[in-house]
Length: 72
Image (cartoon, one colour):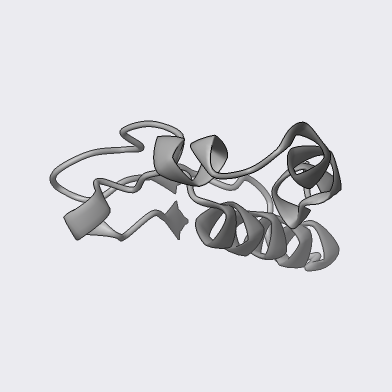
């Protein structure tokens, strides 16, 4: 089970969180003992939104080159 657990931010999809999600999914994919991956949030939210402040401060080139997009 993959649990998003940043309750203060309501699991806002920031670059660091998205990188961690990608790492966890890659690890699950390479582990033969893992079959399905169930993704869940915490008690407050599954994932509230993208990190708008982070996106607003970046340029188009920044977004293209960032690890946020490279991981997906």
